[in-house]
Image (cartoon, rainbow, N blue to C red; front, side):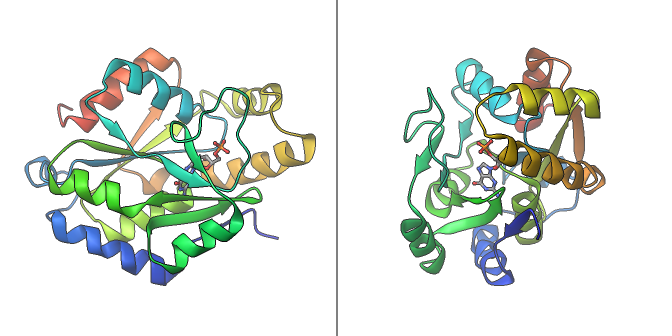
Length: 217
Ligand code: 5GP
């Protein structure tokens, strides 16, 4: 059984609508990319993407981070509308059918997706925009928007990733095992990304990411 499933070609094609608001440009053309300002932060589950996103939200509130919808249950401390919009399967499937998601993926038994409209509004206004999503979702964004900047967050080592995933204590052992299996596949995808940041410290990654989002690097 595959660990991670994602939006079909239909959804990736639908995401292409967003590309109308941005200029197509290859990597290494920062002047053109400036008109899009869409940055995607991805990497294996447990690497610390959400911690980095939370720190970024605190430090640089001008950088808007998309709030995903998910069918996963909230973890302690998570607030509906802040970390995620928590929805049931039926509502998620309705959003997919209505074309309301820019990309979506199934990860370790739950579905996750990026609401399209808020992202389109930000990009149309030329505002810096960040998505924090899994590798399958990042691939869909890459197909739909060539000028998006894809950033891969890597763990300092495989052992460290295992430690983080198993010590989090928020998921039952079966779920942790599925996340580790997914992480192995996701780590192999690093070469598809424009930049890799090694998560040696949240502060370091945040500084680098802010510079990338603002096009200063
Ligand atoms: P978690 O359950 O740990 O919050 O997230 C599990 C995985 O889903 C993480 O890798 C996270 O980055 C990813 N994820 C969160 N939101 C989205 C989304 O909107 N789309 C996709 N494709 N992945 C997401």
